[in-house]
Image (cartoon, rainbow, N blue to C red; front, side, top):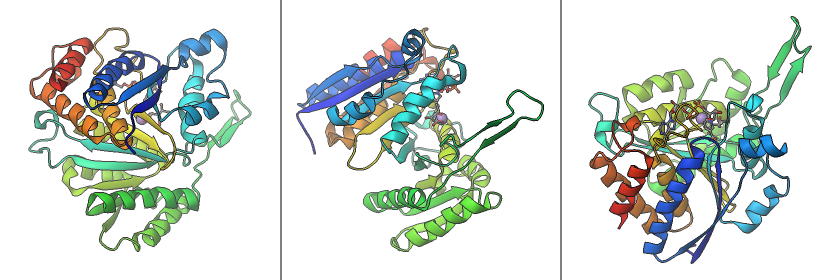
Length: 353
Ligand code: NAD
Ligand code: IPM
Ligand code: MN
């Protein structure tokens, strides 16, 4: 799958997305040239500024052009306090996930340096699991509505839609990943004790699919209990598969276990199709424009993109360079360091050479 030119659509978006994406692309360019391939990057302007200026979130045609013309999409983050209801973020980010049918939200949690873990006595081997978050249905379909808006009798509904096809394909992706990587354990997480309809569908499908993978140990945990287990003993988990909303929450918790959102990566995938790569963090309006955003989540997301595009050596080189920067305390304030984003980016580039 490895190729000479990798075509990337870069969508920095809003806030710190506009800062960390260019930083990550510098590191990716450096790694690519070291390993003998080229990046062809087109930067797309969509985000809050573009929306406020034009009234357009993302032109309809882009949803067809992106998969036709690029190998991967690299996104910073979307969300701006000036846009009411963040409609542009829904349209663009959730629009890409849904319309490209990127049903796997792959979110690996890995502790890159022991001292960054907030848990007492836990080391690098203890925090190393991956969340398979269902990415195209659940509570995110925007099915529902508001009746009698603005009145005392207003009713709002937001429906949790789970299909057998949707549940089955994400569960299967989790098991396939376990099989491919030789991981022993897959844990389902839901809230089947209270949400009995969708819970029933998830549990039955999990039991059904798991029979095809007799070598994998299975377990099911309610989402509330899983949050507790992950804090007390994250070493119990290799692969976690869950619905859209729970997966969103769980992966910010996971990010905290690895040192914070400044290190958490994700890939939105549908095997055989274009992937959308983004750090787990958002646009961080509280620090946007200050030059102190941690670029490592975006840089490591670039490594994940390379890995999925068959450029494993370049991906590993980036990871080794990030590890070296962390080891040398060449970090931004969120990780206890004194460098700004530019300083961290230069440190990673120096380790890469
Ligand atoms: P956030 O991830 O933007 O920020 C949460 C906290 O973590 C903030 O204190 C922030 O400063 C810090 N943080 C996040 N990333 C950091 C980094 N790289 N370096 C240093 N500190 C970092 O989440 P939020 O505050 O809940 O949301 C802000 C906006 O981002 C909202 O509009 C939200 O909808 C949007 N958002 C977008 C995405 C996305 O596009 N993928 C993801 C999450 C949130
Ligand atoms: C994430 C974000 C998004 C989500 C928001 C911005 C819609 O929190 O990617 O984790 O909920 O999926
Ligand atoms: Mn989130």
